[in-house]
Amino acid sequence: MKKIFDIQNDSEVKEALKAAYETLISGGIVAIPTDTVYGFAALVHDETAIEKLYKIKERDQKKSIAVLLGDAEQAHLVAHEFPAKAQRLAKNYWPGALTIIIRKNAGLPVNLTSNDLVGLRIPDCEFTRELIRLTGPLAVTSANISGQPPAKSVSEFMEILGSHLDLIIDGGPCSGGVPSSVINCETEPAVVLREGAVSAEELLAC
Image (cartoon, rainbow, N blue to C red; front, side, top):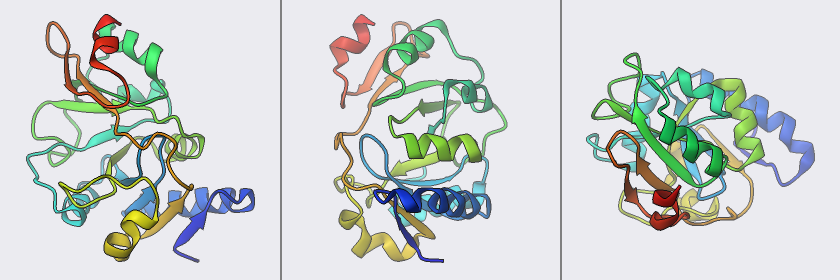
């Protein structure tokens, strides 16, 4: 089996889904495209695989890793509850470039987040959503060394980080190229922690 699948070629999509699913459930790390930037993904309940994400990125373990969902129905698998303001934001911006922070389920690995919160997002990328519907929620962090710009294409991380990955899904350049905005819905009022593809003014108005 080859290490890189080019899903711009329709004939590779089915095989790529199967290979990515098998790699992830076996504890591997897969590079995946999203609507914003590329990400490195692991199963959300696989503590050992999540540890690999931190090592690959040289990421501070005090920094949490976000979770991508295939659809909103998967939120209950990682969130303690989904408050009304989070539901309003999800209805308006999912799938899309918004990460919503809410209280996490107690059963998640301790190395996923450094506190009792978790960031959730549904990417506007059909291949990645279909993959997550098969695997369940994925812990995903941007495809780069911490502190460096996130990768918008496979070529931007391949030379330095490609050897650390178990599988790479090449979906071509990411359409957005800007990281998601991040909003904390466990505060009153909600607080925008990162202004990315969606403006803080727009989010707070919602």
